[in-house]
Image (cartoon, rainbow, N blue to C red):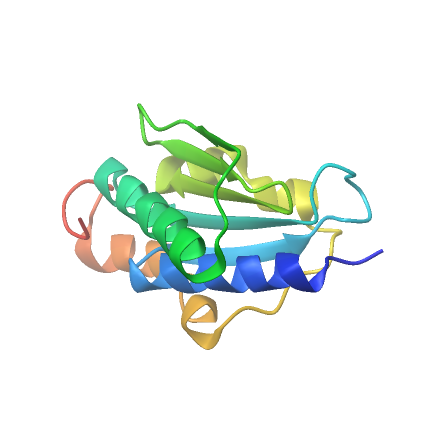
Length: 144
């Protein structure tokens, strides 16, 4: 079984919205063969809590406006360190960069096929590490 066309459409729209808000390390996995509750996961990260919230808001707004999709559940909003948007067909995880490294969700899903994303989203790979190294940024500041 593979992710449905609708799931791929939602993943691509969410990935583009995240990239537009300067999310880092955007990646998506087709988890439909190993999970029965959803087709795909989208992972994205940001260097500070405000940007996490901004990315989540943009994803939610874009999917609602452009595709008529609303999450059935939104968790982690209060702390904005790891926000989960559950659209049933897809689940979006937007994490603070520190949580992304600590929980390393990529390790859990590395055996699942990656979903090809829009070019803007692909270009975000490795940007979090490059930005931190170049600026000495520990995760608070810019990008809000």
